[in-house]
Image (cartoon, rainbow, N blue to C red; front, side, top):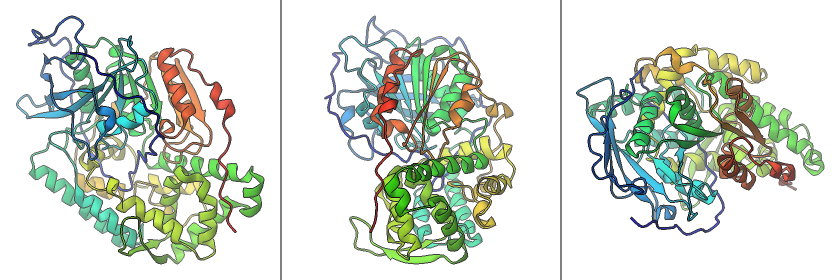
Length: 536
């Protein structure tokens, strides 16, 4: 098959809210076993010497790759033009010898170079619950396929997988919830009802909910590597994809040349406590940048204190307003309380230049900007029918909540934001009502080893953003403690998933795959804080 080269146009990288757990739910898995080591290929007859990966059918063990059409995506993805595509078929539950098979969409974007390197890069999407195939634009816009093919596979349960584990009812509830008090007990009851309805719907479709987790997903990727006949490859994980990458590194290290982690979420510390810590780091990074910019500091002094005061005031007396969103003339009711403001702020670091002015407007009785952004994130087309909530709760409820106490969110909130009201502290950002949700999801815990730190000498790039309030920058040094060949890089003034927003981060990542021992980081010295918007 002739290699077709995709067009090389430079586009502005899409800003990706890769971890929106406040709107998502997950899926879990217990200690499922990977395919037996040394499984022999049953149908290698069509494999020809030098055939580009993904152009022939191959079966290895119980897994089979077959070339075919590219996976479906919510919108057309131009970067998939010329991709070699197909389907990987694997057992849904590797512990059940007679269980059903599931199909995962695969797209392989060719390297732009005429002489590509032999070890491709695999893109691991965020979420949990996002589909990697739909993120091809971000990866290719950042130049990740300069010298290597880039492989995108839909994780089990995601948009282009069969079966999928989507639950539109949860997305619809999240849209309605902008008009409810964020952390009220009444909202919690509705939240759990939506989760339970999702679970019942997926179970009625025959999904084995205990088979949607990191252990099974890691085995899926290892099956793909073997089915494609690749000796070694590289990983690039964003957000939750770093969580999966670290599990894969621990369970299947032999096929890895190097690993890039961007927006790091270590399985050994993931949960409510770490979420509060990350929020503190991202918020403080943004507030500090404003304080160091004379115009911003003069117009918005003591921004951190203003934010914390607003959280207290709104939790005591929520503000209700009405906004209209782009593309619609229908008014939307929005309730802003302390919990809503904290969660807005967690995502608002993606629009950092606006944050000081937006908080000042709110403090002076003008909540519309924040209300519009808060509602827009929940009611946008990208928030509807795209997240695999079955995978979200599969990960959360088997790998997180069994190993973190019910009061962990409260303790984490008290430690990081002692001035916040208890009702706000009790619901970690993006993880509201997590334990009640997981009680309704009712899946067995993953083995305790899922919380082990990943160790080994695989060359690793640990990338973080200085404004990342979803996976704090301290996770880079944390994972490097047990990865002696890790290079820790924090890109200042950037939010969650720096590859999506920073040309410098893209250059560092591409150079890392060129030479994992010496990524080029000189561009960091040229970066400056954003110019904050200064209101009247």
